[in-house]
Length: 40
Image (cartoon, rainbow, N blue to C red; front, side, top):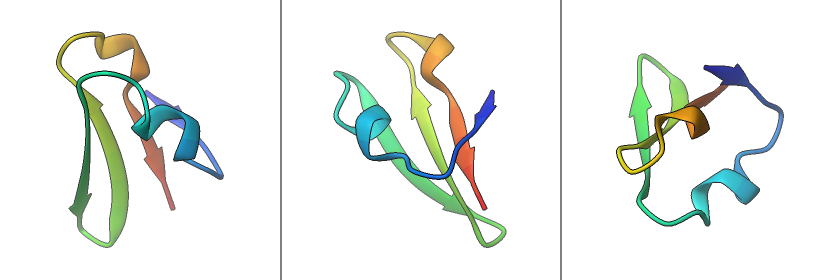
């Protein structure tokens, strides 16, 4: 999982889902798990 300052490019990928957990923003991608990321 990458920690990134901006998730904009990752959330536009196909299959990406933006989830908020414990005050952090996550991008979860079931189609390509390599694109998991967290912000904050």
